[in-house]
Length: 254
Image (cartoon, rainbow, N blue to C red; front, side, top):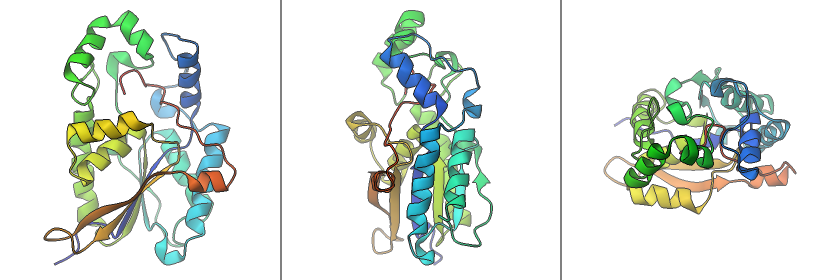
């Protein structure tokens, strides 16, 4: 039987972006709105984010060729594509790796009317949504014109099916966003709502941190992906790049 899963799967959150910096400033100043002009999809990496992406690329480059990513899938958002590009430029992929595949299903969670609002802003401007979120919980709360974590998970189920169809036995790198990292963990490890929210509550996913899975053929009836490391930031620290874990610019109801 053909192996369904990649032999190794890495999931990397994009490097720090200008939106991350703006969100951190807004929260620090207790503002209602995050001050950034671009659409979320167009927000670029910050200078620190570029250093983080370079560091992860060099870490991959230090691995033997047979241990580097062969396939790269990325969110269409600019900060994710830039992170993937810099990983490649640093020599982090196998020599003949094809161009990365942009997959819209890996995009950031959409927050609809809550986009660019801090938690304080949601409480002030949309108190009914703040109450709804408290009642339903963050996994199932869907803001008007936006998505819940459950909605993100549904599109990621489809993305994983595509990976299993086309990239079995390959080494695959996914570059995406904080909620995508968490929802992929939820799916791959067959977690409950409570389990993934406990991981989220324990701390943010750091920018350019590495979450890594290896295929374990003896687990289950056909094998499965087993977690090797999560939120791994040693490559960034060893390169002397700053470690950051700021929220994204559309952070209000993450």
